[in-house]
Image (cartoon, rainbow, N blue to C red):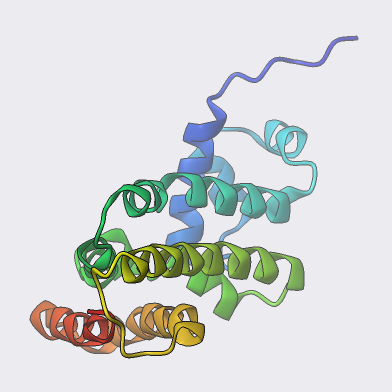
Length: 192
């Protein structure tokens, strides 16, 4: 007996699941919330995601990584000076009206909120892959003589991660976008 064909678009369904996980967090997003948002029934949900909510979250993190930072990561490979690209990326994270501003960083939230070590490790991998790409772009610019960082190279990724995760918390406290952007500008001066 042949299995039933999917009657939904998996990428669209994952995007809807991302919205639920992003807004509610992993623990607070119920399977029913996810099914409703994705527009699929319980049997289709467990047929598509045999590992249930955990498998869906893994797929959602991979989908998120393939969609949201992709333009920035591509741009970092072609620009001579990555500082403005980094600035705009951090500005988007600090935008109180944007998705990052409302719900925080998808990966940072997972790292802080989730106890499951496999899910936490995947979130860590994605966020460090992005920070490493930032560092690689900075190194290329340094070698070309475009920037002259004052911070030691071995600290670049950690510094950028600290700015990233710090913004994730600070924007919940400080709502003035001018102040947040000033902190970002000041923080990135160490690479100029």
